Length: 485
Ligand SMILES: NC(=O)c1ccc[n+]([C@@H]2O[C@H](COP(=O)([O-])OP(=O)(O)OC[C@H]3O[C@@H](n4cnc5c(N)ncnc54)[C@H](OP(=O)(O)O)[C@@H]3O)[C@@H](O)[C@H]2O)c1
Image (cartoon, rainbow, N blue to C red; front, side):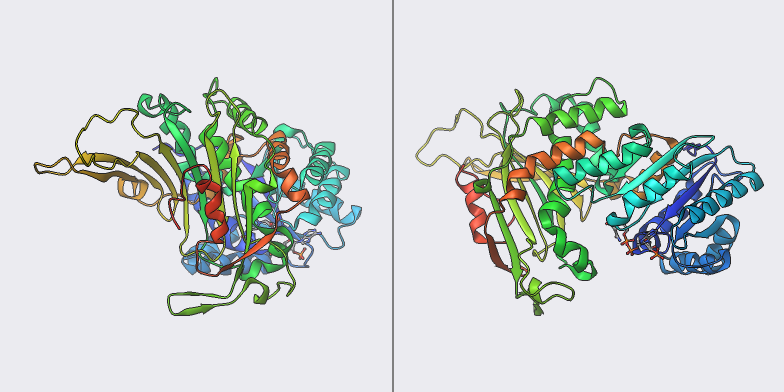
């Protein structure tokens, strides 16, 4: 397979000493450098943070992070020595940013680079507006080559703050140069959703209200809040998971055929789905928080007793909701979204439930039970899909049995690239398809505005269970049931 070509550039990371950089970005950048056309290196890495470090000190941090992620020590040392630099932001004054600019230009001169730049903000969200303004004031928002700004979620905490953040970004950067990362979009199965739907007549022709009865999107986490408590306790499951990852999966499942595979054509169709969702009403939502419970023989603490969580916290760790996409294709087909921490297993999937066959042709005193077909698209733990269908059990009696055709990416293609690797290569090539556009972020917040303003009551559930019993009401009232739990 041909190695992707990218313009030679400097990849500048703000927050270069942080957790995201050490655990995700550095290993992904290392892997990416091995897949690119790289003679000479396609990118130099310039790490920035306020901490005072020199190149040598930062290279040691890079080596340690890579070694912790399985890169042999000598290889990690060579990689860091050959392409890694560090610039301290000090007090983040105008003079500090002028020094940063001078450092960046010195690297570009020394390496004969044409001035293409990525600014990756792996920063606490509070720091983003200040850094963006400082980049603008230092004349770094436009360079001699292309300039791309990368933002990590959260993209605001509600519609008003998302709009404010977009205004801040647009004051310095053009929307086309802004890349908002939702790492779910880098997963192979998510990208395959479009190919699966639009390249297979079999599926796209039944992908509508005539053939589909309802759709479930599930992101179940087995872990609790772990070391993310300070952030998570302010955000909760609705902001952290539903508005971003689950809504992305929903819009890719429900979108119409784009006019081309062009980034904006695809994103236009996703935004149309969001615009067609009636704002979710509190009665269509169940919020929960885990109490004490068990996983096998292990006792699990209540959320309020996790380190870093307020003892009186009313933050939800579970959300289940139902919504309608009011389009010609989906009118009357409920979409059920569900996510939670401390559920019995780690599982991310979209389950498309087809309708029951309209005519039952087997007559007799006890007609066999028919289970409607389902298509399960799995993102975790294994990427792939399963199609459940009915067949006749061998023998004289007419008895039906459900069987499953399955496909696993790992069985067909071996291990998959990490989502960050996919997204980094797209970023370097300037393909924004898998990144979230400003209007998409705002449209997603609008859907959840009523429940953010007036959150429904918080219900307890035992850690290690499938969430509050009350959540069964959401599919139950419409004659359905959750696939799991
Ligand atoms: N960690 C993850 O797995 C993960 C996953 C998805 C998204 N994210 C998002 O990624 C971002 C970074 O998360 P993180 O977990 O890496 O945070 P972190 O561990 O707290 O690291 C923050 C980094 O930013 C630097 N920093 C903080 N304030 C700054 C400022 N005002 N100016 C310049 N640099 C500053 C810190 O170094 P100094 O203090 O030396 O400046 C440090 O390098 C957040 O938006 C988070 O929501 C993280």
